[in-house]
Amino acid sequence: MKDIVLKNVKKSYQGNTVIENFDMMLEAGKITCLLGVSGVGKSTVLNIIGGLTTAEGSVAGIPESISYVFQETNLAPNLTVSGNLDFVLRAKIKSKEERGKMIAEVLEAVGLIEYADSYPCQLSIGMAQRISMARAFAYPSELILMDEPFRGLDIANKSKLIDYFLALWQKKGKTVLLVTHNIDEAVLLSDRIFMLSGKPAKITAQFNLSSDKTCRKLSDQDISEVFAKIYDTFAVGI
Amino acid sequence: MTKDKAKKILIRFSPLLTVALFLVLWYVAALAVNAEIIIPKPSLVFSDLIKLFTKAQFWTAIGGTLSRTFISFAISFGLALLLSVAGFLFHPLHRALSPLVTISRAIPTMSIILLSIIWLTSQTSPLLIACLIIFPIFYADFYSALHNLDSGLIDMAKLYKVKTGDIITRLYIPNILPSVLDSVRSGISLNVKIVIAAEVLAQTRQSMGNLMQVSRVMLDTAMLLAWTVAAIALSYCLELLVGLIKKYVVRWRRV
Image (cartoon, rainbow over all chains, first blue to last red; front, side):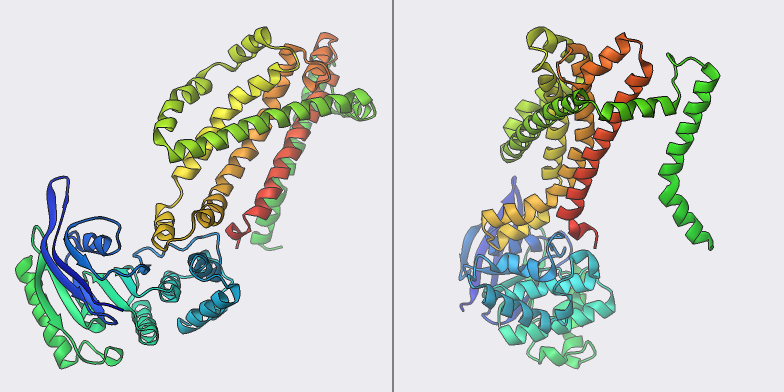
C-alpha cells in the first residue's frame, strides 16, 4: 500500500477553475479528511482520485481498485443485501464460497448478518448505509473514498455507523479519504484533516490528530481544541 | 363485524358489485327498450355465448385473432425493445426516431386501417395496423424505463468495475422489467382491440372481427354482444397472464 500524493493539481470546468495549487497526501492505512463547505470542490477532488475526471498536475499512488461509500446508499433494490455485496465482488473473486465467507464476515461486522436475505426496501436508512459501508470494506481494494457517508442520519444512527466504520477500518486497515462538511465527523474519525476553501479552492489549513479514534470524544481536550480552530477558520472563511 | 373488516370486504368485492350493477342496468334497459335487435337481454347474450363455445368456428376465430395478436405483439415488442436500447445507447438514433414515433402516435387509427387495407391483404393488414399503433407506445415506455433507471446504481456498478454482462443482467433487466411488464399489460389488451377492429374492416377470414361483422350484417345483436364478451374475456385472460408473470418476476417489489 502506497501513500497517495496530489501535487499542484488544478481542475477547471468550462473555463471556471474549481481547484488550483492543490496539494494533499493520503497516508497509507490512515484516515484523511477533506473538510469544506458545500460546493467548494470536495467532490471534484474525490472524482480526480477516483479517476472519474482528469486534472492538471501530478496525482500519484492511486491503487487499481477503489471502494466507495456514497451519500446515497446506491443499493440495487432488486437484489438482497448479500446479493448487493456479491454483485460487486463477482468480478474480483471467482469462488462463490469465498465470496459468501467475505459477505458473512462483513455483515457480521456491521451487525446485520440476519438481514442477509432482506431487500433494501426492508432496511432503515441507517441500516442501508451500514450495508453500503460493508460493501466498501468487503471489496478487495486499498483505498476507500467516502463522500458525506453520514449525511441524513440521526445522531443515534450516525454514532452507530461511526462505531461500525472504525471497527471495520481497524480490521481491514485500508486507506480512507473522508469528504465531509461536518467538523464533528472530521475530528472524531481522522488522522489528518485538510481544510479546503476559497475560490478557486485550495488547502488552507491542515490538522493532525494522533489520539486513538475508537475512544475519541468531542469533549477530549485535543479534539475540542482542533474543533475550535477549525470552527474559527470556517467562520473567517465564511 | 368491525368497520375495518367491512371496508376490506367492500374493497375486495367492489369489482364484482360493479359488474352486477352493470348487468342489472343492462337488463333494465333491455326491458325498457323491449327490442332484442337493439338491446338484447343479458341472458340471451350469454346463452348465445355458450352456443358459440360448442362451435368449431368460434375456436378457429379465437385462434386466428390470437395468433395475429401474438405476431403483431411480438414484432412491436421486439422492435421497440431493440430500438429503445439502441436509442438509449446512441442518443442521435433516439432523436432520429422521435419524429417517426410522434407521427405513429398521432396518425388516426382509421387512416392506418384504411390505408393498410388498400396496400395489404386482409390477412396481413391487422398485423401492420396493430404494429403501427402498439410499437410507438412500447418504444416510448421502454425508452423511459431505461432512461429513468437510477443513474447512481449504474455509477456505483461502474466504479466497482462490475462486468458489463452483470450490469445488464442484474441491474438493467430486473429494474426496467416492472415498467416493461406494466406497458405490456396495458398494451396486450389494446393489441387485441386493434386487431379485432382491423379484422372487422379488412374482413379477415377466420377472425373474431369478421364474425362480429357478420353478426352486425345479420342484425344479430345478441351474437354481436356475445362476441364482444368473448373479446373482453380474451383481453382479461391475457392481462391476467402478464400480471401473473410480473408477480413472479418482480417478487422483490412485494416484500
